[in-house]
Image (cartoon, rainbow, N blue to C red):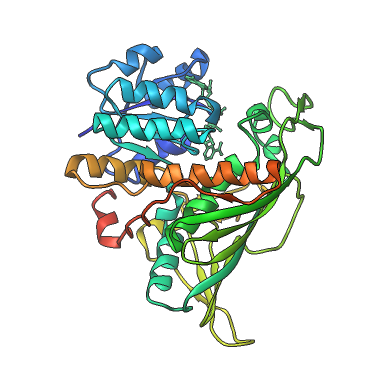
Length: 381
Ligand SMILES: NC(=O)c1ccc[n+]([C@@H]2O[C@H](COP(=O)([O-])OP(=O)(O)OC[C@H]3O[C@@H](n4cnc5c(N)ncnc54)[C@H](O)[C@@H]3O)[C@@H](O)[C@H]2O)c1
C-alpha cells in the first residue's frame, strides 16, 4: 500500500481524512503545516506523525504528498514535492498563475511523476451520469448552456478568508475549477472566453471564528459574468459571484438539439440529472442514488446559501484514482493536462475582464476517461 503525507492542515483536511473511510487505498501517515499548532492538532486527531515540511518531503516511507495549502502556495509546495521525487496531488487550482502551472506539468513529465489536481467532483455520480447521458445523445448536440455559482462570500463561514480577497484569490480561482472542469469533462476543451468583472464592496467583515467582526480589504473583483466558447462550438454563459445573498437558479443547464439537461452541482458528487425532451414537457429525474459516488453521505446543518442540506461528498476520489493509477501504471483522471487547461481558462477569464477583450486559450486537453461503476469499485472499501 502506498503512503500519503499531508502538507496543509486547514479547513479541508478533515474531508480528506474522512475519505479513508470510503476509499481502500488512501493511507495518511504524516502531516505538516507552517502553522505548527494546526499540524499538531491534525496529527493528534488522526494519530499520524507530525514532521517539518523538509522532513516530510524527504521521508522515504511517503510515496504521495497531498497539498492542501492555500492556492497562493500551491506552486511553491507542489514544486518542492515533485523535486523531492514524490507523486503529488493538490487541491484546486493547480496554481494561481498559468506559467507556474505549466512549469509544474513540465517537471512532472520530465521526472515521470504523477501530478494530480482537484477538483475531483466530476468523478461523482452526478457528473458521470450527465456524461453518460450526453454521450448516448439523450439531448442531442449541445451548443448552448449556462451555469451559476453565487453566494455572499467565504467570510460567512471561513475563519481566515483573507486569501480569497487578495491577488490570486477571487471567485473565478476559487469556484471556477469546479464548473470549468465539469464542462471540459462533459463538452471537451474550451477555445476562448469573453468576460467582465466587478468589485461590489471595498471590504468584507469576517462572520465566524476568533476573528469575527475583523475587516478584510478586498483587492480583486468579486463577481464575473462571462461566456466561454468550446472547441465543440458550444457557447456557455457563466456567472460566478461572492456578492449574492440568495438565488433560485439551477447550478448548470445544457441545451441540446433534442432536449435540455440540468446538471447537478459541480461542487458536489450527487444528483439527480434532470432532463426534458419536449416543449413544455415534464422534467424527468435520473437518479444516482444507486451509484457508488452518488449516495448521500453528508447531512449538512450549516444552512449555507447554495448548498443542499443533503450532499454526496466523496472528495478524495481523485487522489484514490491517482494512487490506483500509480499502482497499475495507467492514467489518472484528475491529471496535470486537464488541470492546466482549466487554469488556462481561469486566468483567461480574469484577464479577459481586466483587458476588456476576448482571449483565446493557449492549451487544450483530452476529455477525462469516464469513471465506470466497475472501475470505481476497485477503489471503494
Ligand atoms: N475550505 C473548503 O471548503 C475547501 C473546499 C474545497 C477545496 N478547498 C481548497 O483546499 C485548499 C485549502 O483550503 P482550506 O480551506 O483548507 O484553507 P486553510 O486556510 O483553512 O488551510 C490551509 C493550511 O495550509 C497551511 N499553509 C499555507 N501555506 C503553507 C506552506 N507554504 N507550507 C505548509 N503549510 C502551508 C496554512 O497554515 C493552513 O493551515 C485550497 O486550495 C482551497 O481552494 C477548500
